[in-house]
Length: 176
Image 1 (cartoon, rainbow, N blue to C red):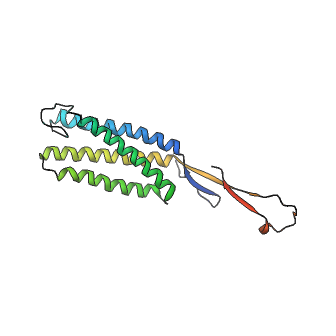
Image 2 (cartoon, rainbow, N blue to C red):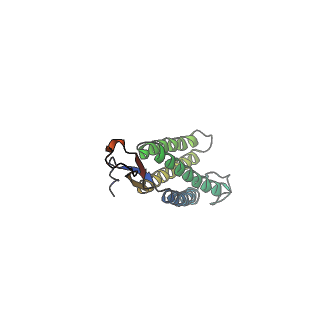
Image 3 (cartoon, one colour):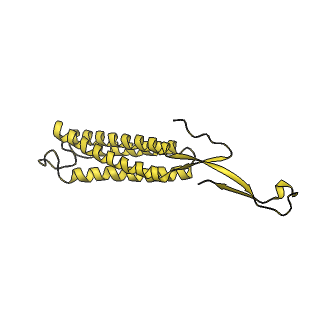
């Protein structure tokens, strides 16, 4: 889909309902991706990630907390995107850079812990996957939630229709 064509008579907006519906859907996807990543790490590779040894494939409450954390990050990222759409030019560019840097921090942080190398790498890989998923889905979804608003001009009725146009009161408003 081509981006909206902006002219002097238009401005770009965002459909907040679509944006937040997409943000909630992204939170569900992120939570499921976190659970899938933990299942792969623990169940297939037998790597202890976010759980003490002996807790099994599902671990302890770390799995639920990790999934809820991923969902919360997706909601916060949606709020960030909404703010950027309202406040800055090229919101997608700023959003991507912010999310890439946050993802980098989330990938490097587990590598600094004093745990087994396999746990460090598995956690870093899951965090990388979650960061990429959240960034890509919210960016794409937000760009499809952009709207184009037409500016309309009306003249206030005047008693003297012979008055020059530049002296008549002009009202500018947008259709949303």
